[in-house]
Image (cartoon, rainbow, N blue to C red; front, side, top):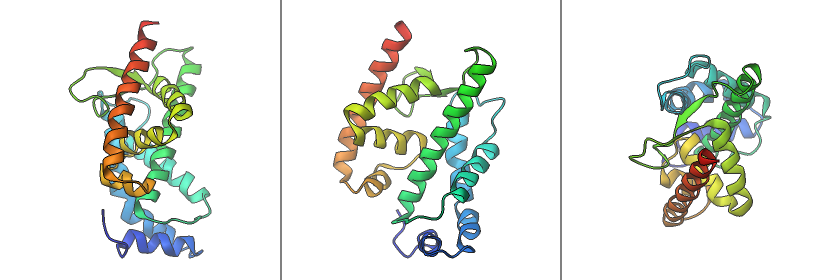
Length: 190
């Protein structure tokens, strides 16, 4: 995790203070990272034919641009917001597709990041529903999954974004993966 004087952190501070020129500069610096995160989500199981990496990043850009800058405490919190935006975009896209095809061809993503070595996969809507259930029971665990799985943040970046220890993130990440795999496998059997 870069220190507090990183260019992204500096631009986040300027944007938070109302500097309109900081946002385009921030996006230029963060664009490659956001593309990498989006690419990992979309190609986890062979890609997706109607939503490209670029389109997903541009949707995040629009949502960030619509956000008034707010108060960004760190680079990790910025990426956490972007991860949450990507999750919401993917869920919205899957719902639209499901509506168009009456439930068919929902966007599939791999859960191999959640359960290493497993070929198990679930659609975005199923994953979103499982995360909502987890958030009711354990909000921090749901945030950890969102940041790690959808945002591609490391354990230390996730700990920084949530203001907790690395060990807590590791422990709750393990518990959250087990919970999600159980819920998703139960839902598949139903």
